[in-house]
Image (cartoon, rainbow, N blue to C red; front, side, top):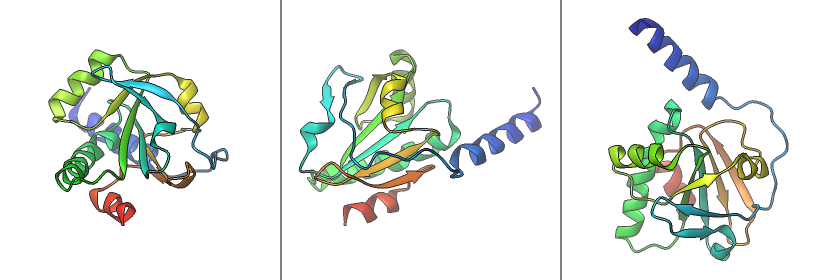
Length: 161
């Protein structure tokens, strides 16, 4: 495949995956789930009730997902440095083998929680129809905002305020 075709494919994929389009009604209450991170630690969404949660769905092959990883990492490091417990940042990789996700995380220097082992069931509960997608969940467990496309550091900080 020529370089020109690769560039065109990447641009089209980025536009298609990040442009909002009509989709099924999303749940107003964040469905609960239990998944493990790359180290095997278990995360259950309902255990974070009482805290603000940013829940991000992504895959390694998605160009916009790759773009947002450094933004998520920067926000995660800044929040940890300030000893802030909110928002809780949880990212869910959908249906990719753990070794693939681990290699990606290592290459990108990612230290935030990356949950794996998610089947289409979790994505279907949230009606995930494109990547990346980020849900902002309030302390009561209600989805208050859905962001399509790559999230930026500044958008994360807006949510913290």
